[in-house]
Image (cartoon, rainbow, N blue to C red; front, side, top):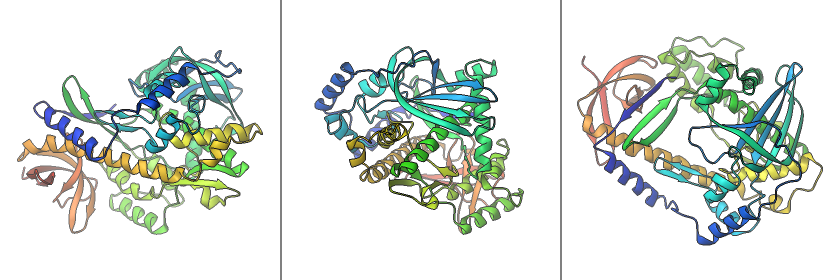
Length: 473
């Protein structure tokens, strides 16, 4: 698994102070009010489990290493030429009383925020990391989706109900990948289903960018930036979540009530521009091939691929939430990156909107009335999620800036390997440093998709602005 990182030593104090400053400027809460914590503890202690018992199903969770807020647990079994997928989702309504202190605070927070120096959780940790988290060996209440798939991976029948479950293992992505490589009987079907679902995504015109992940890590007294390519199991696992979100959207659309995630299809002008950029990089995008199919076929080891993925970002803009209140036209319901209607319904520990979508789906799928709180609260959700999403984006950008500045400030005059990812006319080119793995600007003339050497000519500490130029070696 390709991974690049930079270790820091003498800048740790500076970075810690910078991250604390960001928390203060963004007014991030450092704790929950006492009333919220008290209500959360009481709710977990008094939790009544559902009568339906599915603890005999050998669920497992697959998450980043060290995760404690475990939203989903998975089990896949062969069924003739197809499969039966059981997907358990944490049951937040079981521990969050409508209109209570926890509920009110969650509407202020909207979603869990992730900072390098610690998360700002949506719910008190006794809920998100204990009482509602699908932890290994613990009996928990969950929304259990059962999806029957045919030989091509299409869903042919879907149910959702509340039931008690018990995860057998908490796996990291690496552990799951190793078990699949060893032909583990419990996990091997994930590869088959994941690949079938990826093929269906291509066929319906969807696209997964699968950009390398960038993360700020603090361990053993060092701060570092890591950028790594996704493991195959992460893509297969994501397809199960996407499939569930698509089923959640379909259930709500059929009932004419709920909330879905939407993204408009790219404008023709953006597609034409992207096609021109692809051609300029010397790549062939065949006529009749969707942009999703083209992106999925890129060789991740070629320097041009990073430039293509960067250019493709402008095709994935305008995502938002749409409240369903009656019939909805297909064009208004589609999520262009997925190529189908889609709802956020698989991460209720970390996103407020998922709790509402799950409540709608469970009621609608079983011919029952949607809970009054879930119907009444829909209208405010798009605004809450947009506001808190912007906050999450700002936190991520500014945290990365703090670490980037600390890395680069003492390195004026140093040379770096880089890849040009975009030329922008009179503006500096956009480049990606190989190590440290940072995206920045540079005054270079090389075309996009080429490897170059650059030199850090200066660093404006007040503005946090580096100036890179072409190296003379």
